[in-house]
Length: 507
Ligand code: HEM
Image 1 (cartoon, rainbow, N blue to C red):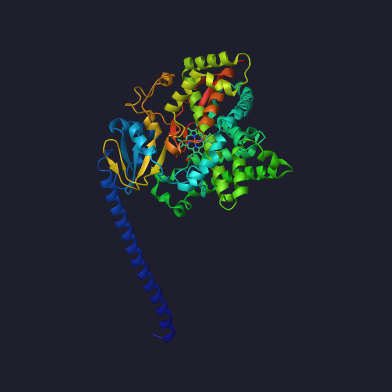
Image 2: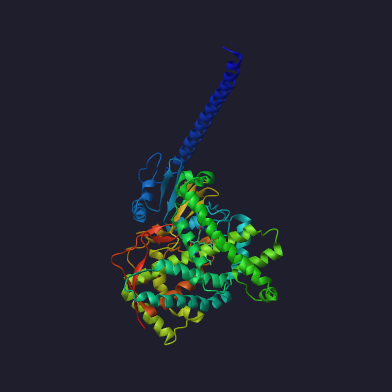
């Protein structure tokens, strides 16, 4: 063999040697990972041995339950068969304990300091109030709580009514078309409009704004994408970003961020205008965005632009999508129960008289409408469930326990449909919420409970009351028998095929 031939083979031998070493290393790493997953699975199996669940596949767990169109019915079947709680395997090495019993809920919600895994979206960095923890969460919660002060909320009622009126005017043109209307989209625009005026001091009309349309489309896309907690491969950002869903998610996040950036920029510019800063600073109560902007001006280093955007993102999403879901399902419930719809209409007519302008004082004078709203929130909780990771071991009232680090899903949907708590849970029965009626604590949790409950609860209740008061005054609502909505748990409770109603103009 010639010298030149040898010099070619040696490097090749070197390359193949390297390949061999790499393959052995890869195999060792793979075996180590497999051993780690196996040990983790054994640990999980020991942790849940006291809790019963339907049989599961060793690798795919109970994923088939999540993929079925009737996911919520599957959940209810579980709740009927396995009292209080039941583990759901998301894959061979990931399990979450689904909780739907009031006493179990109480034990978890009343503990402070549970870690919240960022399961809501992959819309990073996004660490606003909803996902923050520890001292940071406490500071932000304390800073933002004044935004939900009675005096501030009082001033918002008029803005809420204006947004409803804009929507009802738009409906007038559509009503003549004699077909049913998909209402979720309309309420999303309306609740975004309200939020922009109330929390972000925005003065335009969001319901005619193209930026809002693309923001809402982005939020809808994010809502429809698989929740990463359900797919073990999507837990790693690096893998998720390579998938079609991940890329779509990234694009939708960018659109959502563009919207929030624009809102922040606009408000900053308004405050910079001559004299505006001092005028706003001297107000007794500040709007949400102004609280954040002033906090940043006074405390720039500890409250970064990233923190600011994360909070704005959180409130922008939490403040409109949840409420839009709530309102849509409430009106669907009233459409399918015309006798209750009529009673609400009569109640509102009696308090408003000929004048259709609604004020803060009216909100406490509509007991029957409030009962219907609460009953619809029971049947259709806008946030169907939330996840928690246990920061320390927990023992439930019946003595069963779970170790630190375990994943728990608080299913508000299954709690609200739990036969043992609500006899005939599928029947729409507002009398559950009649003044003076009592029920087990932690049996009704549309806004969650404990220290991490919804900060916007009162804002949301007010908005829902304003919409449910004004809408049936103008239109009669009836269901579309050919398009019955299919409740589907996403980040909020949506309907697979939209929520279609027939609307008939009354006056
Ligand atoms: C019908 C409407 C609403 C429902 C059903 C609802 C429900 C909830 C629930 C269940 C949680 C707990 C989430 C968790 O623990 O992971 C929550 C938290 C939160 N909500 Fe709402 N929400 C509504 C409206 C609003 C509104 C209008 C705002 C703001 C204007 C808002 C802002 C928030 C924030 C910032 C949190 C996180 C609170 C914290 O962790 O300290 N929500 N909401």
